[in-house]
Length: 314
Image 1 (tube, helix red, strand yellow):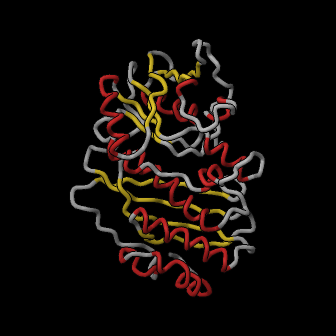
Image 2 (spheres, one colour; image 1 turned 180 degrees about the vertical axis):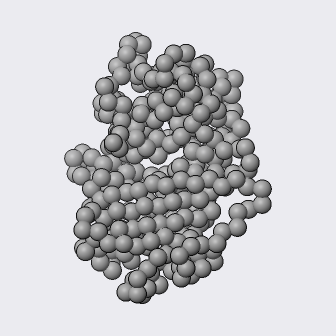
Image 3 (tube, helix red, strand yellow; image 1 turned 30 degrees about the vertical axis):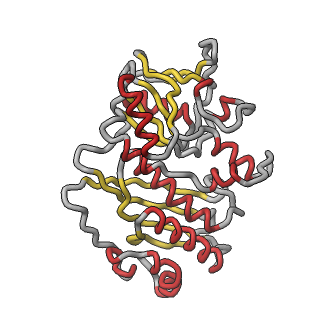
């Protein structure tokens, strides 16, 4: 990590215990990482800003874990296993030592669960919102990575887990809807990276990505990459609240489930992959010929596609 003299004690106290040997005790401006023999490296980066990607009063432990997990989700979508990560944090004057201790405790918990260590990064200060950025490194066998390109007309469209829990969880965390056991708020604060499913889908999924900006928005990304269209059947989308507006559930984002294409003849193999990964998978539509776009249909086949498909960062 790049540091000025006053930062050394803070780095040593909070972040050095997170580092592995490749991080050189966070005393240098770079790390030394030897990739596993014959592996391809997979790199991804995501940033989170207070008030945009997490609530300012969220527990710092969950903020650290969510930062790591949304990046792990990118590895899952490529069928990769994690190696380590680099992290940059822009601290505000209000970010005190107890907040950092909680943030690091959350990272340490998930480092142990998912088997990786911090390699380095940077700490800066900002007069604006607390901002966190993480770059994750993973590995796949050569040629085995899942990508967004590859969906073909006639392929099935599948999704893991449940869709809309991110949107519902944000509302629950804000106190806008009942959440007696806290399960929905937890789903928003602690997404589940589907690493085991990503591995099980190697050689089976023709295209894949994770759902971060909304199911429909991300399905449209698969359409553009595959130069085809897609139809999502609203009645097939797995949700935890059937009374919630389906258009809100499929556009809300922050679900971090895997969305992928597979050949119709591989339906049983996909179901078995889900069972092996202990992750439910659901066929929700199909890819079709036509311009790169996605349509949402109701039980009668009528088009109910909303004008806004999900989140855009521009």
